[in-house]
Image (cartoon, rainbow, N blue to C red; front, top):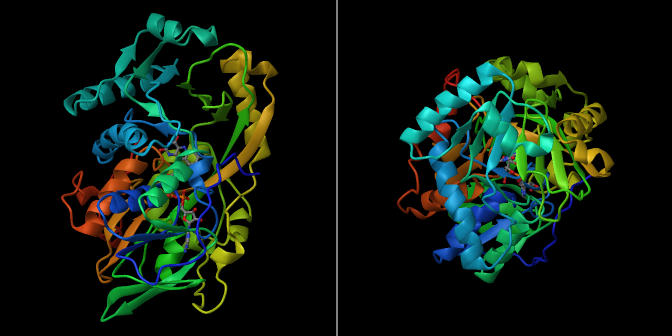
Length: 441
Ligand SMILES: Cc1cc2nc3c(=O)[nH]c(=O)nc-3n(C[C@H](O)[C@H](O)[C@H](O)COP(=O)(O)OP(=O)(O)OC[C@H]3O[C@@H](n4cnc5c(N)ncnc54)[C@H](O)[C@@H]3O)c2cc1C
């Protein structure tokens, strides 16, 4: 089942050419195209299914600096401002608000990790409050429980995944950007080694710059061009329940479960990090590079099944450019939720917030989280294919940093001063063994 998602109407007529073609209409693709259109660059965005229908509508909605890896923190901080600015400049509603994020714990080791992160965050100018046991119990009053401690990050917030990407695409269209749903990009044309066009199922769009923002499909697309992009995806399950009478915290997480209020009053429930690993050819191919990542997260990972093969997003095969591709066969990657995890999540949520006992499940779904070996996205022009910009591998953090990442990608595509230092995201780092530092959270 897919989660709720706003629809937008787009055109079926492709432009003959555009300065930049963005492939993929998730949060990364739409923000990239939006920031290009704002600076007068002609931009076309092609989406094989519906705007926002994959990861970008399936997530918790957290937009956080809290516990971010040092490499992503600058992008996370810029993004929070950009979420707010987007609403003011476009008049569109993404559901973003700085409600603050509440972390509660009874695990002293975890609390001391948060405390050390806070020291680092202070040096980066980020405000976050460590909570004593008494303060945690006060802030988490709705839980009716005692806590050893917690953290509250007042400047973080949430946006509504069912609204955000369509809202940005709507703003893009108002700015003159052309957006096309049900239109898969099959490949890239080159002239003298440089990008000269994007081949879609509906024809070619001439361009000198293509941005690959295809989420979990990015590696298989890159493979068609001879580009090796190590990417693996895990399937995480999540549910939403109906509104309840008492007002609960907008966004709270404990070791057991996270609870996030949506703008229509429903609550989204999930277990942090818990996911299924579905075996695919691509997974096997890149597995050696992901050993450090999986070693760090193994407690929460369970073996999956054949869902990944059915999805087709991690195919190792080469496809033809003049015939339907796996992207046209699977317009929306909508994997089956793990019902054991769904039941477990609901049970834990009721334990945390007993007020949820009478709430009914409205939706249960799953999404593939696309990761890189070090848990940091790949953003930048790919060496050897001038004009081809990779923007994928957001490793479970891409929604919150969507505006900052989109701004950065637009900066790279248009040759503007980058909003943050792009060095940590360079795709070149994947040509090594990538047994470097794996992002902590
Ligand atoms: C359960 C879950 C919880 C999460 N929680 C959070 C959270 O709280 N906070 C956070 O920051 N992040 C979270 N994430 C991660 C976040 O959702 C992703 O990092 C982010 O949405 C990635 O955006 P994207 O645009 O790269 O990918 P996607 O949203 O997956 O979009 C990629 C799009 O590209 C399209 N596409 C692919 N190939 C082609 C092609 N060849 N031609 C045309 N279109 C193509 C696809 O159809 C898709 O719509 C979570 C993810 C999941 C699954």
